[in-house]
Amino acid sequence: QVQLVESGGGLVQAGDSLRLSCVASGRTFSSSAMGWFRQAPGKEREFVAAIRWSGDRASYADSVKGRFTISRDNAKNTLYLQMNSLKPEDTAVYYCAGDGLRYSIVVPTTASGFDYWGQGTQVTVSS
Image 1 (tube, one colour):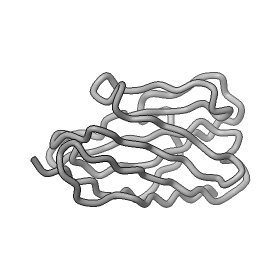
Image 2 (cartoon, rainbow, N blue to C red):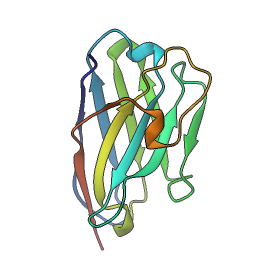
Image 3 (cartoon, rainbow, N blue to C red):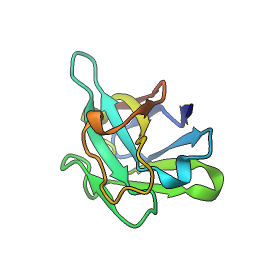
Image 4 (cartoon, one colour):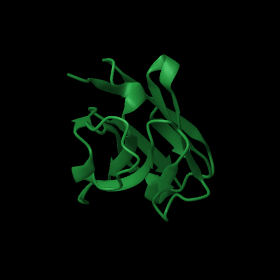
């Protein structure tokens, strides 16, 4: 069973940056696509970014493209989300997610494409 633990959230001002981390337990991290989702109060969980197991392909939601960067360090079993130029509308709980398929060439961009989820980390951006 894979466990995912997010960290790095906090309260920042608009225009600031944050880097989220997600540490995975288990031996499948390096062979699994990983993603970030977020959920704001009263809204559904939405896709933010995802990255192929090999790290050579990533997908982003239009709302974060050019501001957020997803990356991974397979040697450290860690997924990252670098968030720059943060906006108040980025305020949400951010969740790390892992795909149960191994060595897939597909990068999932929907919640149904992921099998493992972390507990989330709160990001609050003040105006």
